[in-house]
Length: 315
Image (cartoon, rainbow, N blue to C red):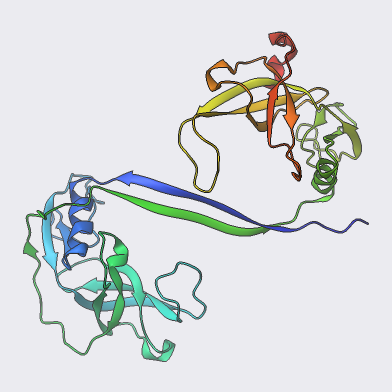
């Protein structure tokens, strides 16, 4: 039995969004140590503010300022903070209803231990030393001895100098991937610069990369079949946004390539040709780097384009 493969993988991308007037005022306010909510037509003050009434769906725009103190409505202890969480020491996740608000804000509470946290405890905002117009401008909440003074939300025009109009939120997933028998064999063959798939014993289609079972018939696949290395571009897209940590200049082409002898197209980057000359039916071959364990990209072979009927079922 071959040793099971295992490797850490990271999926990471920046999520960029524009802000409307309500969210722009809220985040800019945090930068200025001001917490804003929005008042509904029913008179409730929502913090954090939303652009539409969750009950009536009416558009909301009446901004109000609430206090930086509040009351914990519920909580959960986090004994082992993870990377990029607000605090590096154990903390409590808390829902805090700020004085003057009718809803609770999710954030973290810096407390020495779970015994120091309770529903109904009074807390206040600890502002970050450097603020940029993000929810992290609230570094955390901390215990507060003051009573609720009955603070009433006051109207605010939401006008600040140099307002924040957009945010970039990094999204990241760290996990460990362990391929099964079929994909382990596929990866092992790639290390030898061969590409292998598996044939379904029922429909006889060859799947690359192999999945260990036929997705159509649902039966196990064990017969290995070497395919390619040449193939045909079945469809493609032009990428114009540069990915973080990817040393490829835009624009470039990412395509589905149906390798000769395979009944499933795989993903690959196309190089060695101007991006605007890539086309369906283009015949390509893999290009390996000196120490690469998989093809770096595919390039044109110089052969005539494949006839559409030869790959139309693999689009």
